[in-house]
Length: 466
Image (cartoon, rainbow, N blue to C red; front, side, top):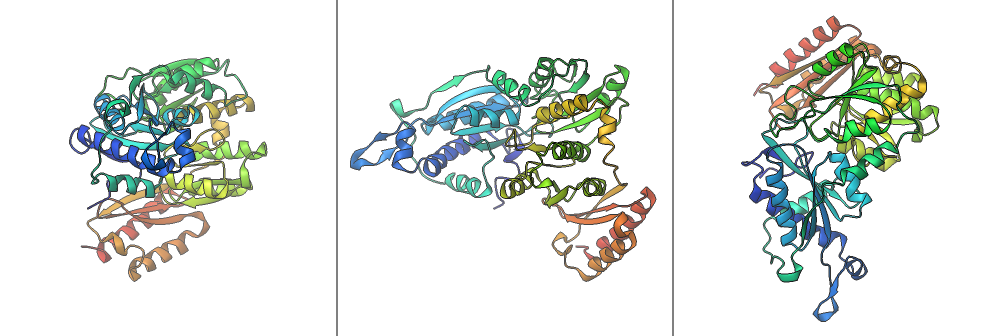
């Protein structure tokens, strides 16, 4: 059977793949694993409110969990089911309502919860949903712990009874604490700055505008009226066109677009030009280095970042650590090596001085403050990264397992790399879920990128055909 957990929790069509039954069972399994993993010693059990049972064993009771949702219509159904599963395993639960994923991560740690549960499918359409867990530290659970939770789904166990059943409470005020935290991460106000925020009709619709207003900015909020089914629909970081038009039409200084659960953002400059995750990371890295705060003078990013970012960082005396695609791999590298900044071209930016995961609102505030303090435009700061023309083509119906070993394919890649020299880059990446290979080529000109890419596509399609 395929692994239940994917790269970002459990995700699928709400009501079918992600049902209330699964949510209840998964939350109960997570509670049981949490009790075993985190509170397995006598001292820890007593600290958690344990009672001594026959034979002197400490039995942990009433651990605490917080559950948040984005704005999907299925969110409350799944949150209630998770709360029921947690309570049935003896965990006290706080339902925090609509909350950005990074806000849930922050509150889990800052408020001393033993577990955080986020109900969201990020940038996916409204019909999808997902469940992901955060440890007491505010970090996502590692693969190994997710596997243990999945294994517990088939365990036989006895639910809590009587006074051992967890209590469920609702507290919709906790996002105020998260906003306080966001506002406190920057050393400046944003007075005199006009900003447009595209909230994707998602989890940032209250938090992001309020945080910017608290900092003194003039805020125009778009897509901030979620109705359960309009999340990510033609808006947000996957559809920034409306934001680009609005920034120009309203003569704003800049704009930011978030995704459904607000763990990523893209920016728009005053001329309506998109500023992607690579440019955001570049300007933040240079700013931090100038302040002596960029640990190891290193930026962590993935193989999908544009060559222009790598060139810009090299020119600025900044090293780049490259990981596989996925923000969890970026974070793993950051934690293992003591780096403080990393992210993805898609707008996941992790600033570990302030957060345990990608945070779109935090990123937007940090960028806006950089612009304000520099006394220049966002376009000026973002121009440090000049993107190379890029072509990305999916080659379907091929044996993706041989992409890295087939002699003819490897010879074609070597020839392409030789042609491009240091003015381009080639990447063949097998899909994680489909029988296809993604061919990506960057070059000095769009014409060369297209030509080289098409040549590689022909070889991949011929040599790896199923």
